[in-house]
Amino acid sequence: MSGQSASDAEVDEALALVNEGRKGHGSIPHAVAAAGSAAGWTAGAAAGAAAGFAPASQGATPNAPGETKHHDSTPWDVARARAARAARTPEGATASVPLAQALGKVLATPLTALTDLPSFDTSAMDGWAVAGPGPWDVRADGVLAGDGEPEPLGDGEAVRIATGAGIPRDATAVLRSEHGRTDAKGRLYALRDLVQGQDVRPRGQECRSGDHLLPAGSLVTPAVLGLAAAAGYDTLATVRRPRAEVLVLGDELLTEGLPRDGLIRDALGPMLPSWLRALGAEVTKVRRLGDDARALREAVRKSTADVIVTTGGTASGPVDHVHPTLGRIGAELLVDGVAVRPGHPMLLARIRADQYLVGLPGNPLAAVSGLLTLAEPLLRTLSGRAPGHGGAPMYTAPVREAVQGHPYDTRLVPVTLRGEVAVPLRFNGPAMLRGVAAADGLAVVPPGGARQGQELEVLDLPWAVSGDLGGECFT
Image (cartoon, rainbow, N blue to C red; front, side):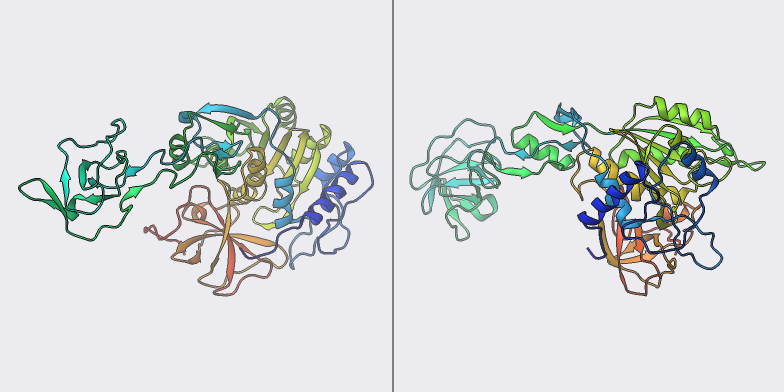
């Protein structure tokens, strides 16, 4: 994987600075942010400050000509690292569940073999179990899978055997059905050379009892269920899925019908629950609160979810109530704005010791950016997942064409994969979902852009299948 990632020291320093700010030590410059001139707080941030809310940073980041200046924001890779380190798997979150209920959960303990696999010598093919060199006298009775221990073979004897059946003691090999023939007297002859142990699966070939098969933090997939069953498990120790509650903000949102009279359809309410489930969360509730500051404050205070996800209201407009609300309830702001486009005004806050709020921008693609930047690493930690196990892993791919970048911020661009090449998609504005709906992932474009053929990190979408799937591509 290419690209830079925050070191532990950088993250520790950044978190220490955040905590210092909460104790009233003034502004908190980001550990690795570019230097910039001081900027006044916005109305929303000032309201939070008046309520005793310590922002993650104050300062300004250089902006492109014509852009509005904003307070200093966290570099994208540092924001992801901080979100991953902000939480830990809750105490008491482990439960033993039957295999039928374990799919999609995460292993709380390593998967250790309870038996040898296979647990006895078995035939890998239909044919004959033979002892010694041929030709062989064939016994009348055969051996099927599930039969008890078969009778031993004497030298020069053979017995019909099915795939998966136990090998008789003293057998030296299995002769495949298509590689042998019998004569009128029932004598068996090999049509090909036969070596000792051929087509026999010896006991313990796959694993021995006590072998570690998978580490804790592995996602339980259908294949993992099969492996666990074969290895002797009836139940698995898994981590409880973190509970998430979605609060949809905005008076302008419709839940049905066509847009009208300045109102638009809510795209995030239908999208976020499924996306959060794909990231490992159990979505307990979706509530539409409009632009009501009191309703937002009460919803946050009363929520029992591990993670509260809000949509919109994270900027500084007259009805952007997230910052003031967090300030009034004494939340700890861990990330306040990220140097990424789209999605700059995203945020992460700690409400209580074991409860977090991820504030997503209201624009749909900007919200997706916030999900993969802050929600995914946070949920990965809360669910006990190891990096790369069911999360949003990154890999690299060369881009087919040059990609325009932001002068100072990381940019996330929907791409589809054609072979080993990432093809940037059009319709990638903050309010657009058309591009990401056709995408396999989001390319991480560094500040300044990327040239044709440059290797870029790609954030995999949690349900995407790599490769050319055909269909229309909006490039």
